[in-house]
Image 1: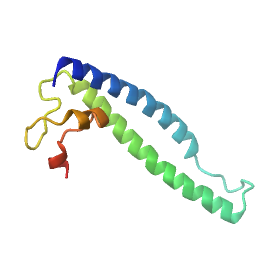
Image 2: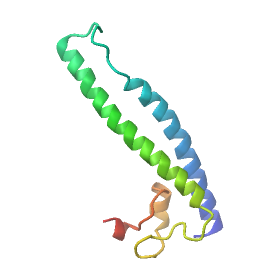
Image 3: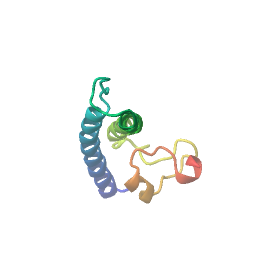
Length: 110
């Protein structure tokens, strides 16, 4: 991986981290408990609880990706960045551009 490609990936990571932090703040607001005295009907309350469950799942995944991106940002200047941890081949630039936190090539990830 060239220095220019690493700079592009570093910008992508920093941008993704910024977006995820904003998304996490929004999701934390959406997953606050629904009070029982809230003026919702029974079905509307169940729908709200279902939506809250989905938002909790998205929040968990967002936090996990944020951690992985932060780790990738710390590793980006190390020689093993962009190298698959299983087969030790280079991870494709296309994959690194989309998922810069990747530690496995497509073949090993499957």
